[in-house]
Image (cartoon, rainbow, N blue to C red; front, top):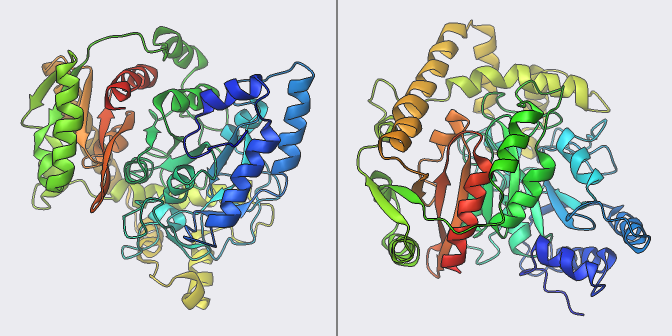
Length: 480
């Protein structure tokens, strides 16, 4: 049987393997073949930094388990990509795309990797990414890393890829894996998922452990699934979510289990009240606006869903007007980065070559042409903030972000309009759920052959991730 990995979903692949239409070995081999043919050759997508030398052996072992009657989960034998800032205690490096950590190995699997392995996932490789999750330079292009070059969009090399989980997105779109795990601090799952026409979920902070992920900021970092359907994303989230003693932000098992039980993603039919944030439409192209209006919003309304115009969304000026008193700056990320990164370097690297941000800065300066072709201004700011007593600035910024994004933003809009969901066009406004710690999900709408793909970014209540996935699955059926 010829395997069309570009269109194949996790759910369908699990069913076909159960029917013995093909094996995990066959499926993994096809993904690796596509990487060989398209990653550095052909269109040279540069979406994968390295393949897993143990992938086929893992697939063979999982096939043997299936033959003996053991199927661990729907992920049993499913090939996945991992972003290169997620630790794996195997023969693959964990470098965040950087030249400095190009030879670095993690001492063990990140918590989410351990969960996925136990569920039977096969990791085919580490995905390229915007280096250091786009937290080293203000001029670095999306998708570029010193270690892997620049990721290209699968649909057209001139289309944007977004950052920083760009390799994950391009890789899944190209059939290098059936799904991927990316990470986000502010838009890094959402943006590349929009550009590659995927369902990308940035979960509520605390559902998925961050232990073993090269960090930016503990208050906003999370890992999340990037998949072809909302159902596939839910399959991944079910396995990834849970408590971890190494990440105090993880909510109790009782909370996330109650959420999962209360909102099955088996997609019972229900009509949603969807709040559309009109202010943000000023930033999208006319062709994307037309796709969203006609292919998505009109079709939803025609099928009984209520489209509610939300005309005045309080955080809008805080994002796009630098003169506002509550302009949303980067103080929180700048403050939290150094301590978070140094904790990872101490506790997760085998070699312990670098233990401080200052050591990385000095190394980059000595290897400027190879390591930092776009500079490292963000690293300088983070080091300076730690040395100059930034505490009061940080606390005020945290209070501002909560007030603007939660109290006056998402919470107010959902409650006052009695909404199930808020809908941003494309990825505009994604910093709001990122700073709030609320879930955000991309719902692909279509592709314009001049401008690339577009989507709606849907936001639901905090810790209501599975209901958001359920509603997204209902809506994606309408959009076909």
